[in-house]
Image (cartoon, rainbow, N blue to C red; front, side, top):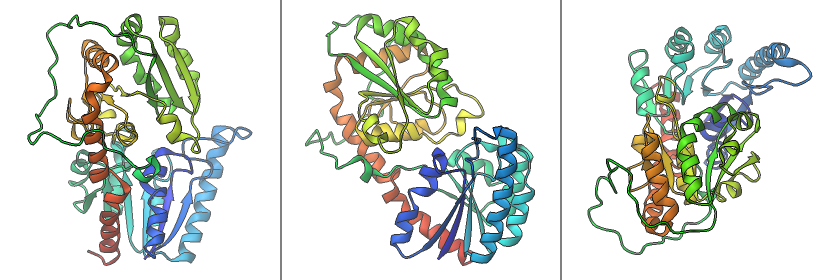
Length: 372
């Protein structure tokens, strides 16, 4: 096949994990791929031009992309999310006239931002690839031709996995432990400093506010460090966890050191509010933690409850007391959870890896090309 991908940008997470990491594998299988990223990135601007003038150049560049597409004549065009993060869709309509077959890939609740645009784009396309069943359910009333391909990680990047446990129980319980009515008073061991980590875009750092009280209390009992990987630390400084007595360290995100920086975590955090936007996120942070062999603790929002079996492959926490209870257990007795790390890695390898989902993506694109 000849497949063209219109992406949000070279370093945008949705582009990296839903398109770019699949391209080398598609090429290895003999498919021709053309990647046309937004220039500058869809959500960014060139500093010397400012956001508004950069937006003009984005539009000019996309018009040039349409000319290039018409010349290259791909069998299938995959549009990642949308061309512009606004309410316009005139260039998508022009793209529809050019593309033989058009596929829309979505990994967020874009209908929350621009409902009419979302409905138009879904209607324009021959097929939709949705990052979760929750997203697929929102798409089907508009366009029934939907394939669910979850956001994935390339497990090969995280290295070989050595199983910590040789035997597993035949019937794994549905839940590893229940939250008590009140927090227990168990003997406190004094480990070395434990690194609790979070990674993501700076715009989502505000979700860490959920952990303000639990981390403050935990830091009074154990030596901990909150380590944050993001492209800028300005939102982190505004949150001011260090002023609450929580030792905080910022690590600037780099593609070259991303995996090594993640492996510096001893517990991975994914707190989120439960609202119309977060409910449709695809759980990438959890998958990165699980692939790296890091215990993952997340809010039970949206797809998080599908990825994590509480107490088995990770932990779910809603209230501040639940977060504190889970983190206390993990910090005080990390050796008790080796089996959970093994099971978490197996889940990622079997369901949420590029290696597992590549055949599904190829079959989907081939079916679209054939008009099925």
